[in-house]
Image 1 (cartoon, rainbow, N blue to C red):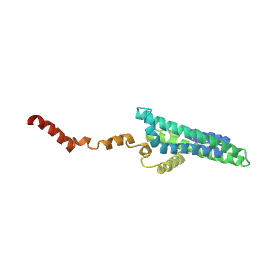
Image 2 (cartoon, rainbow, N blue to C red):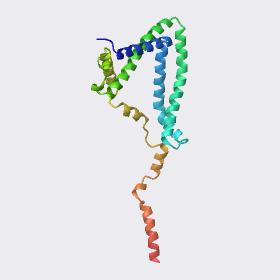
Image 3 (cartoon, helix red, strand yellow):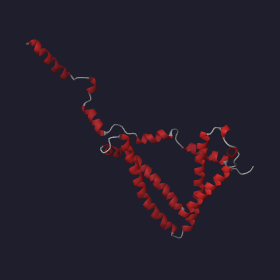
Image 4 (cartoon, one colour):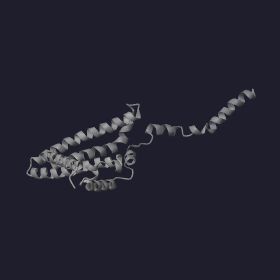
Length: 208
């Protein structure tokens, strides 16, 4: 069975990713991923605390949420990236620089495969079986892509979208809860004292 276009794409993406990672070094690649992960975690935990403050400056809740998420994520990413770049440069200039580049190349190959696997998963979701070209169905790498894709899907939660959104959901702001606490019986009508006072006001003209 000849090599198809998909096989060439897989090899090209893996090779390019491997060469780029070799130039940057293994530690820089790993620390870069760690920086993105740290930025995401900080954003998740700081969102609910900073959102009320942002709402005092932005009347639109959506705009306030976007500003908080973007600001915290980008700010954290910049700070962590500055630190990680300095650490990785020190490693590249050390005696283990060659080992770091070799591990970086292997890491880049795995990353390239992961990129192609994700793209392939979107492709098979969007294109029905009968409409897929032969250079996809007859590719030698198709078995690897499908097997790796199934493994990745097994690692994801049942509903990843809602799982992420739940972290950003917030109940009513504190000021709204305070307002509700001040008027807990507003929806139940007048209180007993208010009804008695109204009754007295109505009876006074009749007594005169």
